[in-house]
Length: 198
Ligand code: ADP
Image (cartoon, rainbow, N blue to C red; front, side, top):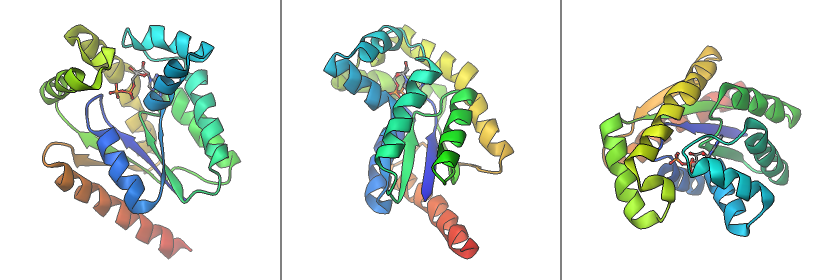
């Protein structure tokens, strides 16, 4: 299986690139942000609880997102692989994901980080807020809160994968297509290594 964690701060372009990658490599896209927003739209108890946190730019509890991901991984156990987008966002989530993949006879192939500076991120998120209707994209203070959550809780996840020799990064500023090609280059070399091992 090809299991990629697409990593980067809010507004780095993970969603956009995930969409292109799943088409090219025939993978399943698992975005915890999207999964949580559909729980909210469906008005479930989980969605109601999550909304309070999300509207304040705070991460939802680890068990909640790990549980959602576990259901999806099991549902698609015969897939060619997964792109994890916006997950894992904390080290305990990364540990939970390792365990759950191991239980399903697979593992993370690689984390690929999209590198974008803070100034560009705020600009992109406010712009997205004008059209997406996402409340957490419409106010600078909330965006700052999310970036702070990212810096304190999520950044260490990169070290977690680096410690396993599974980290690489690409420049997330430039044309969408250019960034996509850089990601494909990383993934193709990963696939070659997987083939050599067989
Ligand atoms: P972005 O990356 O643009 O901030 P997401 O759609 O990934 O947007 O996430 C939106 C919100 O959903 C986050 O601010 C957080 O409250 C919640 N969320 C999403 N994924 C997770 C996760 N893995 N762990 C905890 N909270 C999450």
